[in-house]
Image 1 (cartoon, rainbow, N blue to C red):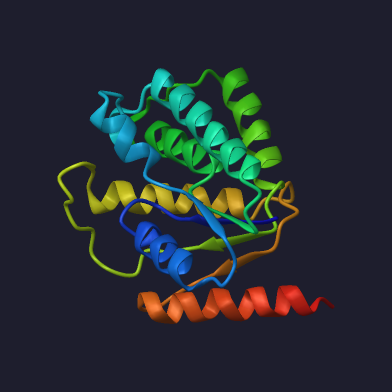
Image 2: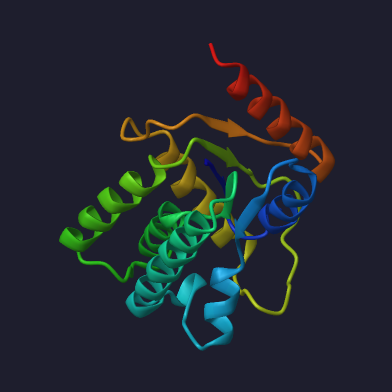
Length: 191
């Protein structure tokens, strides 16, 4: 099973990209997406109001859906976000607002778990901020907050703890899809 993650701050086109990829890939695909939006609707606090119970619910739901996807024996598991995204949001809250939801020890532990999780993927596609943040009625947050999350995520993705190929995808959605398909093609061909 090919395991691919699409990562980036909120409002960077991850959902659209995952939806397009799931339609285009020739193999049976299981997608894991929309978890933060679902949990926000259920009353969990995300964004600049991030709470520990929301992170715990996110970690649990992300892993549950991934395991369910593996049980279906699809050829591709395509996920919007990883556990590392939650760590980036927590760090952005700490740097911007002086409050995070993790203690120092818990932060180190959660970061290690998130790196280990990310390293189970075969490919990560990172979506940088390319266009103005749109209010979708679900997520809050300013563009400054979005940039803070993006900085934290880029910093985490640059870590030596990451052993998975990462590609930066830019441009309109069809260009991003092409970039990922080209990367997957090269991935299939091998060295």
